[in-house]
Length: 378
Image 1 (cartoon, rainbow, N blue to C red):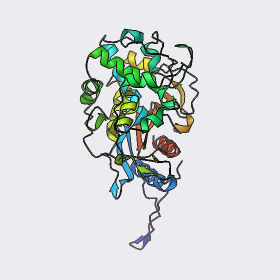
Image 2: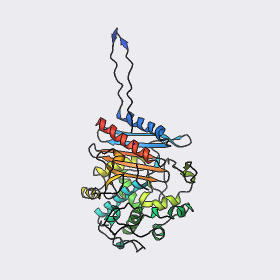
Image 3: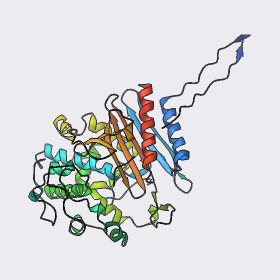
Image 4: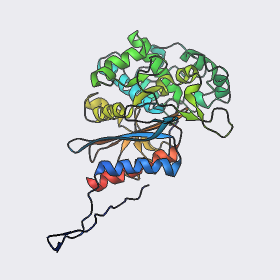
């Protein structure tokens, strides 16, 4: 559920000179398409980083709509464009969009304090606003960094945690007073899920499906733990037993992992669905322009290599992800997965990358290579 941290050498394939009608035809380079170069990058990443599998998608309106994959889910089962992955903290962008859609309907206001919607909790300032939760400027302690968090959660993988239990068990003193600084915090997005549920008097999964997933036709996207994942699920790989070997996360109960992540990091999606979401978000198909402007109003610095600035559930991406190019998006990881969603305004291009293990170096390498290839072609 945290944010992360790509390069690629082009291969020029030459045709063989041949003779026809006693005249020598000049040797000509074989055309390598953008899609072929993108696929070469994925194939190379499997070898260079020894990862299990990867699925990626690039969409450039009027130019390219490509999806590729490489590697395996488990055994000899290949990753495909339809494979569904946990997208980790990229979930936060979905949560933010849902909140903004509710503000457009007058159901919420970005300046609502949290005491309007949820009860009081120790170490959580009730004057924190929705805007501060979205922008990680609330100061609220990140529950996932609590010294006892993972040992307690890992002791019973079948337990479904409620957000109230998490707030009562793993919240230490705040980092700072609300609005005075920036500190990435999963807790803020957990609270946002509670607010969505309270304000709409319905399940977050219902609101997500009715206001985002169904309108965009995202049939391979789910709020894991609250919804059944229907489709081909990519097995995630992580060293759960600390023995130096990757374990198939899908062979363990996932109830605890999904429930503690919830609206901060438990969405599952195919790479094509994620890219459709990205394209719709940044081209006006999801929220109005004033809401998008709010999202892209960055707090800087963010004290992170991943982001130059952070808005409302979205960031201005740092050089480790996009090589210094102008790009916005979000990165994420979960137990056994990592993900990246990128939008390049100069080309109106959307890039999504999903890997079924936690490997930030590979994620960054693929992303930077993809950006370089797109820059070369367009």
